[in-house]
Amino acid sequence: MEDWLTYLLIAAIIINVYVVAQKYFFKKPVREGFVTDTNNDSEDQQQMSMKDRPNAIVANTEPLHLGKMKQYCKKMYDNLHENISYNMHALVKDHGVEISKDPMKPDAQEKMKAFTVMRDFQEALEESRQHLTKSAV
Image (tube, rainbow, N blue to C red; front, side, top):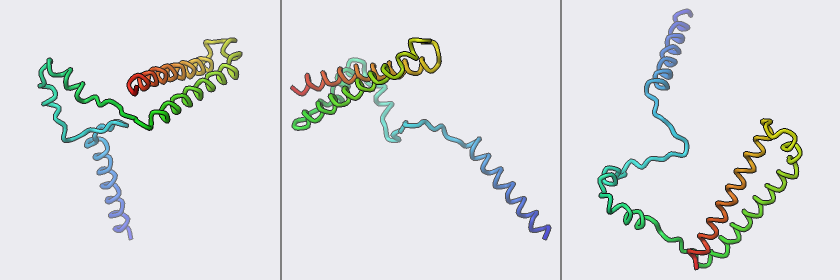
């Protein structure tokens, strides 16, 4: 009976050493949201002459042809803009007094950062809607 337990213990130790070795010595760096293409021609892109690079960028930039979807895109921008405005007003209404008492509190700082993020997103929406209106005309 003791021989069986000894072999089981040795097998468990070997498996544990194998797992630790795989985890620490043979690990690959993982970046979330980062996908690499194994068939890219990065060396060819680096050897492109400097005078050809602007034309290559223009060639890679496709204009957005929306056609009938233009009105739907405008509605999406408008609805997102209204939603962000509502949330900004709600944040000020709900937490304005708290922020005004002590703006340096961590909770107040978090609310102000959230407000700033929403404002930046709203400005980006306005810019992209103007670009959509300008390019789709």
